[in-house]
Image 1 (tube, each protein chain N blue to C red):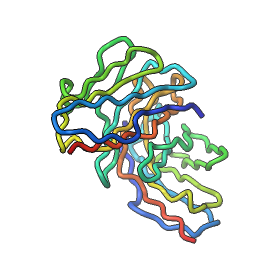
Image 2: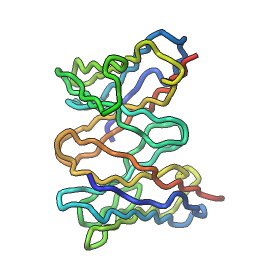
Image 3: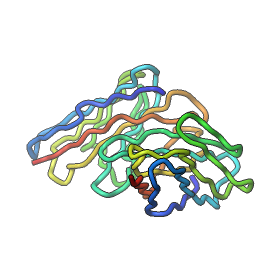
Length: 116
Length: 111
Protein backbone atom coordinates (compact mmCIF):
# COMPACT_ATOMS: atom_id res chain seq x y z
CA UNK A 1 0.00 0.00 0.00
CA UNK A 2 0.82 3.67 -0.06
CA UNK A 3 3.46 4.95 2.36
CA UNK A 4 3.20 7.84 4.76
CA UNK A 5 6.40 8.78 6.55
CA UNK A 6 6.51 10.75 9.75
CA UNK A 7 9.58 12.35 11.30
CA UNK A 8 10.89 12.34 13.95
CA UNK A 9 9.66 9.14 15.56
CA UNK A 10 10.66 10.37 19.01
CA UNK A 11 11.47 13.79 20.38
CA UNK A 12 12.18 15.16 23.83
CA UNK A 13 12.02 18.90 24.29
CA UNK A 14 12.17 21.38 27.11
CA UNK A 15 9.07 23.12 28.32
CA UNK A 16 8.50 26.37 26.46
CA UNK A 17 10.22 25.34 23.25
CA UNK A 18 8.62 24.46 19.91
CA UNK A 19 8.72 21.17 18.07
CA UNK A 20 8.02 20.50 14.40
CA UNK A 21 6.74 17.16 13.15
CA UNK A 22 6.79 16.32 9.45
CA UNK A 23 4.41 14.07 7.57
CA UNK A 24 5.21 13.04 4.01
CA UNK A 25 3.30 10.96 1.48
CA UNK A 26 6.11 9.13 -0.29
CA UNK A 27 4.47 7.65 -3.35
CA UNK A 28 1.27 9.60 -3.81
CA UNK A 29 -0.07 13.11 -3.64
CA UNK A 30 -2.36 14.03 -0.79
CA UNK A 31 -4.51 17.14 -0.96
CA UNK A 32 -5.75 16.37 2.54
CA UNK A 33 -3.83 15.11 5.55
CA UNK A 34 -5.04 14.56 9.08
CA UNK A 35 -3.36 14.99 12.43
CA UNK A 36 -4.31 12.86 15.42
CA UNK A 37 -3.20 12.77 19.03
CA UNK A 38 -3.24 9.70 21.25
CA UNK A 39 -2.75 9.71 25.01
CA UNK A 40 -1.72 6.52 26.83
CA UNK A 41 -4.38 3.80 26.81
CA UNK A 42 -6.75 6.00 24.83
CA UNK A 43 -7.91 6.01 21.25
CA UNK A 44 -6.82 8.38 18.50
CA UNK A 45 -8.40 11.82 18.61
CA UNK A 46 -8.55 13.92 15.48
CA UNK A 47 -6.90 17.29 16.01
CA UNK A 48 -7.10 18.92 12.61
CA UNK A 49 -7.54 18.45 8.89
CA UNK A 50 -4.73 19.84 6.79
CA UNK A 51 -5.56 21.07 3.30
CA UNK A 52 -2.89 21.80 0.72
CA UNK A 53 -2.68 25.49 -0.02
CA UNK A 54 -5.26 26.59 2.51
CA UNK A 55 -5.78 26.91 6.24
CA UNK A 56 -6.22 23.84 8.38
CA UNK A 57 -9.53 22.99 9.97
CA UNK A 58 -9.22 22.37 13.70
CA UNK A 59 -11.45 20.21 15.85
CA UNK A 60 -13.27 21.77 18.76
CA UNK A 61 -11.01 22.31 21.73
CA UNK A 62 -7.75 22.25 19.73
CA UNK A 63 -5.88 25.55 19.90
CA UNK A 64 -4.88 26.59 16.40
CA UNK A 65 -2.28 29.05 17.70
CA UNK A 66 -0.60 26.33 19.69
CA UNK A 67 -0.70 23.59 17.07
CA UNK A 68 0.42 25.22 13.84
CA UNK A 69 -0.24 23.22 10.69
CA UNK A 70 1.29 23.93 7.31
CA UNK A 71 0.48 21.96 4.17
CA UNK A 72 2.69 23.65 1.64
CA UNK A 73 2.82 20.88 -0.95
CA UNK A 74 0.87 17.82 -2.02
CA UNK A 75 3.33 15.54 -0.25
CA UNK A 76 4.20 17.39 2.96
CA UNK A 77 2.30 18.59 6.00
CA UNK A 78 3.92 19.82 9.19
CA UNK A 79 2.61 20.16 12.73
CA UNK A 80 4.42 22.55 15.04
CA UNK A 81 3.70 22.36 18.74
CA UNK A 82 4.51 25.85 20.01
CA UNK A 83 5.52 26.68 23.57
CA UNK A 84 5.23 23.03 24.52
CA UNK A 85 4.23 22.04 28.04
CA UNK A 86 4.35 18.66 29.76
CA UNK A 87 0.62 18.16 29.15
CA UNK A 88 1.37 18.24 25.40
CA UNK A 89 3.36 15.03 25.78
CA UNK A 90 1.57 12.53 23.60
CA UNK A 91 1.73 10.33 20.52
CA UNK A 92 1.07 12.39 17.39
CA UNK A 93 0.01 10.59 14.21
CA UNK A 94 -0.67 11.85 10.71
CA UNK A 95 -2.62 10.23 7.91
CA UNK A 96 -3.39 10.84 4.26
CA UNK A 97 -5.64 9.45 1.58
CA UNK A 98 -4.14 8.23 -1.65
CA UNK A 99 -7.23 8.72 -3.77
CA UNK A 100 -10.81 9.89 -3.75
CA UNK A 101 -14.17 8.41 -2.90
CA UNK A 102 -14.00 5.66 -0.34
CA UNK A 103 -10.28 4.91 -0.75
CA UNK A 104 -8.50 4.02 2.46
CA UNK A 105 -6.29 6.31 4.53
CA UNK A 106 -2.68 5.52 5.34
CA UNK A 107 -0.99 6.45 8.58
CA UNK A 108 2.48 7.52 9.55
CA UNK A 109 4.38 5.63 12.20
CA UNK A 110 3.70 8.32 14.79
CA UNK A 111 5.83 10.73 16.81
CA UNK A 112 6.28 10.27 20.54
CA UNK A 113 6.64 13.76 22.04
CA UNK A 114 7.90 14.12 25.58
CA UNK A 115 8.05 17.60 27.09
CA UNK A 116 10.24 17.89 30.17
CA UNK B 1 -20.61 9.15 10.75
CA UNK B 2 -22.40 6.25 12.38
CA UNK B 3 -21.19 4.96 15.74
CA UNK B 4 -19.73 1.48 16.16
CA UNK B 5 -19.70 -0.92 19.10
CA UNK B 6 -16.95 -3.50 19.60
CA UNK B 7 -16.02 -5.84 22.45
CA UNK B 8 -13.27 -4.43 24.62
CA UNK B 9 -11.01 -7.44 24.31
CA UNK B 10 -10.73 -10.92 22.82
CA UNK B 11 -8.31 -13.81 22.95
CA UNK B 12 -7.48 -16.14 20.11
CA UNK B 13 -5.23 -19.19 19.96
CA UNK B 14 -2.32 -18.95 17.55
CA UNK B 15 -3.14 -20.58 14.23
CA UNK B 16 -6.88 -20.37 14.73
CA UNK B 17 -9.23 -17.95 13.04
CA UNK B 18 -9.90 -14.70 14.86
CA UNK B 19 -13.43 -13.37 14.41
CA UNK B 20 -13.87 -9.76 15.51
CA UNK B 21 -17.44 -8.47 15.61
CA UNK B 22 -18.65 -4.91 15.15
CA UNK B 23 -22.13 -3.43 15.49
CA UNK B 24 -23.07 -0.39 13.43
CA UNK B 25 -26.86 -0.37 13.61
CA UNK B 26 -27.19 3.29 12.56
CA UNK B 27 -25.09 2.96 9.40
CA UNK B 28 -26.52 4.85 6.45
CA UNK B 29 -26.68 3.77 2.83
CA UNK B 30 -23.58 5.59 1.64
CA UNK B 31 -21.32 4.64 4.54
CA UNK B 32 -18.52 2.11 4.28
CA UNK B 33 -17.15 -0.14 7.00
CA UNK B 34 -13.39 0.19 7.49
CA UNK B 35 -11.09 -1.88 9.66
CA UNK B 36 -7.73 -0.71 10.94
CA UNK B 37 -5.42 -2.11 13.55
CA UNK B 38 -2.82 -0.54 15.77
CA UNK B 39 0.11 -2.44 17.14
CA UNK B 40 1.54 -0.91 20.27
CA UNK B 41 3.30 2.44 19.72
CA UNK B 42 2.78 2.41 15.96
CA UNK B 43 0.44 4.21 13.60
CA UNK B 44 -2.77 2.43 12.57
CA UNK B 45 -2.56 -0.01 9.68
CA UNK B 46 -5.32 -0.34 7.10
CA UNK B 47 -6.79 -3.83 6.85
CA UNK B 48 -9.90 -3.86 4.68
CA UNK B 49 -13.11 -2.02 3.89
CA UNK B 50 -16.46 -2.74 2.28
CA UNK B 51 -19.91 -1.36 1.51
CA UNK B 52 -22.29 -4.31 1.44
CA UNK B 53 -20.58 -7.21 -0.26
CA UNK B 54 -18.17 -9.45 1.58
CA UNK B 55 -14.55 -8.60 0.89
CA UNK B 56 -11.30 -10.55 1.11
CA UNK B 57 -7.69 -9.56 0.72
CA UNK B 58 -4.33 -10.97 1.71
CA UNK B 59 -4.78 -9.90 5.31
CA UNK B 60 -8.38 -10.65 6.20
CA UNK B 61 -11.97 -11.17 5.21
CA UNK B 62 -14.84 -8.81 5.95
CA UNK B 63 -18.32 -10.23 6.34
CA UNK B 64 -21.15 -7.65 6.34
CA UNK B 65 -24.66 -8.73 7.27
CA UNK B 66 -27.40 -8.25 4.72
CA UNK B 67 -29.00 -5.43 6.73
CA UNK B 68 -25.50 -3.90 7.13
CA UNK B 69 -26.06 -3.38 10.84
CA UNK B 70 -23.08 -5.47 11.82
CA UNK B 71 -19.91 -6.94 10.40
CA UNK B 72 -17.16 -9.39 11.29
CA UNK B 73 -13.48 -9.15 10.53
CA UNK B 74 -11.88 -12.55 10.10
CA UNK B 75 -8.16 -13.20 10.40
CA UNK B 76 -8.01 -16.76 9.02
CA UNK B 77 -4.86 -17.96 10.79
CA UNK B 78 -3.92 -15.67 13.64
CA UNK B 79 -0.26 -15.26 14.53
CA UNK B 80 1.39 -13.61 17.51
CA UNK B 81 2.09 -10.58 15.31
CA UNK B 82 -1.66 -10.05 14.93
CA UNK B 83 -1.89 -9.00 18.58
CA UNK B 84 -3.16 -5.41 18.33
CA UNK B 85 -6.11 -3.11 18.88
CA UNK B 86 -8.58 -3.48 16.01
CA UNK B 87 -10.79 -0.55 15.09
CA UNK B 88 -14.05 -0.82 13.17
CA UNK B 89 -14.96 2.56 11.65
CA UNK B 90 -17.94 3.65 9.61
CA UNK B 91 -17.45 6.54 7.23
CA UNK B 92 -19.02 7.85 4.07
CA UNK B 93 -15.58 8.36 2.54
CA UNK B 94 -16.80 11.55 0.95
CA UNK B 95 -15.56 15.07 1.49
CA UNK B 96 -12.58 15.36 3.77
CA UNK B 97 -12.81 11.70 4.80
CA UNK B 98 -12.33 11.99 8.51
CA UNK B 99 -12.01 8.78 10.48
CA UNK B 100 -13.44 8.73 13.99
CA UNK B 101 -11.76 6.12 16.16
CA UNK B 102 -13.63 4.38 18.96
CA UNK B 103 -12.00 2.27 21.65
CA UNK B 104 -11.58 -0.78 19.42
CA UNK B 105 -11.02 -4.42 20.39
CA UNK B 106 -7.77 -5.51 21.97
CA UNK B 107 -7.00 -8.86 20.34
CA UNK B 108 -4.48 -11.03 22.14
CA UNK B 109 -3.15 -14.01 20.20
CA UNK B 110 -2.02 -16.66 22.61
CA UNK B 111 0.68 -19.26 21.84
